[in-house]
Length: 353
Image (cartoon, rainbow, N blue to C red; front, top):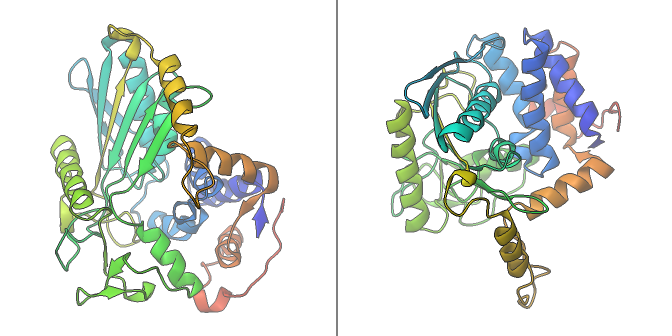
């Protein structure tokens, strides 16, 4: 299916509004799902809507929640999401930190009791748009096995960093697992095997069956495992959130979400060097101009691929699997989301396609 971003946004916001979300909150949550699909991260896009709706219906998401905020020091902000949408709490935290960093040079937000943040790039980009350097970290259920281990003990624990540059900021958005669980679920929905090295099964053995995947492998072996563990402990310490196998609620419709989120925003203009956007831009261009290895098409820096993909999909439409769009349409009609078996192969028409 090829869907316009506007059509996808309206469908999502309409479904969430019908389930009690005030329109501003529905628009914010819809924006995050659409942004994921625009950037080619379908695991965090429209695919998430059925579970999100179930979480609302079961009281695990309070769609009208307005985050409670409290400055604990001049530069440390505590945010209680009150079980609301993750993007509503996360964006509020970033906005407040950007404003505070203009005065203090640095601001940190510790967010708890909020639902899944979605992709992290838009949060740090929002700060970079104001000339700020920003970092975002969040945790998840224990989905990744430690290096050498056979059982999942660590979250995928994504990390995002943005640094102002021209024509757009450097934006790194990555998880510390080899792949997100959302991508494995997408393979399971389509009946496609996963590549070797992505996951272990329940017996701790490598598998290419997405339905058997029980533990995602850490990226980069011991280094990715160590980074994921360090971020897990850092976030849990700063947000007083759960650790490891006690974290729940970012993927399922059964448990309250008890992970944590941390945002750090710094204003370079408060430091002796001031803004470095010009020097950073020149350096990134030099990296892009690096001679290309055989078989590679170009050298890119973090953020380039997502920007190009977003522009392409804005022009030509967002690619949505038939089944995912069918389930979203069923939700819009007020019906339960279709099962995988019942919707596989469906080719519904799409408004704005």
